[in-house]
Image (tube, rainbow, N blue to C red; front, side, top):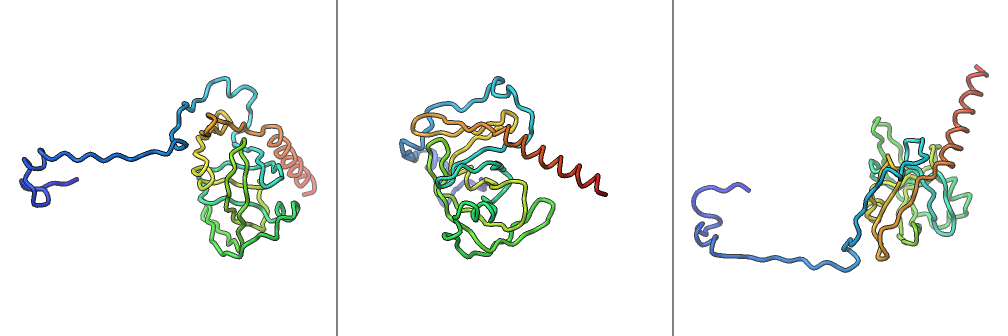
Amino acid sequence: MIFGGNKINVVTFSAAKKTKVSVTHSKRPWDVIEDDITFADEDTDGLLLPHLVISLNVLDFKIKHVLEDPRSSANIIQWRVLEKDKLTGSIIPATKLLTRFNLASMTTREEILLPTNAEGVMKMTLFEVVGGDMSYNIILGRPWLHEMKVVPSIYHQLLKFPTPEGVKQIRGDQPATREMNSISISSRKGKEHEA
């Protein structure tokens, strides 16, 4: 704040000092985190890969290859995932422009509202639907992470978040990520041999 002169909003400093204003905000019981959210060195045992990729229950389906990306301003789901699980009936027409950090952009024409279940915590999540090919089935961006109050640790390959029952966690799905990376590497090697 910038103050000037000996008055604040036509009130002298001495009058302002004598006046005490108290403002309180009430908190809902489920908004108060009782437990500390911490990470330990043991959380890194057996980890090899740098990206935090998890499996997530969406509606009644367990979806693998879900990237947690706090840089993304949108939650994104691939069209082929919706088509495979027969979820295309709930799609809403909506045009949005998504821009990546490399300034490449893509226009989405649809979105869908789906329930996600993370360790018993249900949230209705709005996804932008993309038709192009991407490495992950779903990208969970800041909207989902903030709604869940997630504290991610890429280093520990772990998401932790508060619930009424205490702190819950989702561990990175290292086997699925290794499988995805090995398929990607072997397909690249096959293309190199063809050239």
